[in-house]
Image (cartoon, rainbow, N blue to C red; front, side):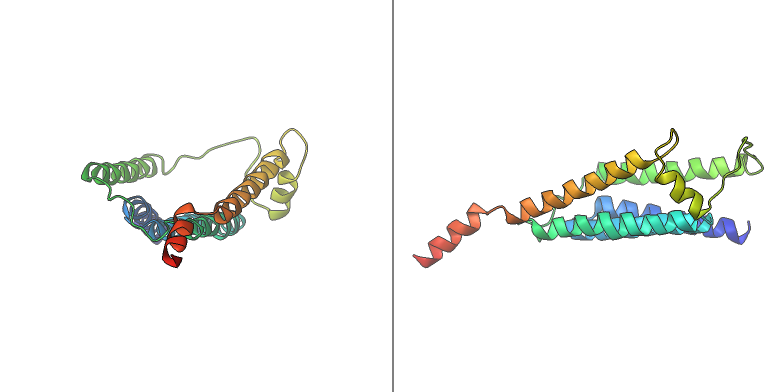
Length: 181
């Protein structure tokens, strides 16, 4: 086994461990932090595949945008400090078995198809200029519509966070009024 395979297995183990901890952690803030680590691990996997632009987008959009938005949403809700219900043992066992199955499946693919070469009419070109042109293109194979849909989704999530944060909590107001009496 060469260093590249060892690095792949180390990154995969990190991603799976962080994902399992994100699902099984009792505190919601810690769950969001483990999600952040899992997404950073996926960016490391992109770096391992030498797709630096996709890794940078992974970090900027998911780690820098989505996870920060989730963490702000957690802090802006009224019950952010409370613990979630502890997951049942069956769910923990199922998540561990799913992670083991995924690892075995990926390992099986790598071992059996290591020499497999995918041939296509056009080779993959991870050039940043080509990716940018394709992303903002309005032609048949352009990605401007999904790009705009994601931006609208992020805008709607930010507006939702603001609405949740500004919503008055009747329990807090009634407790404040009772303390004044």
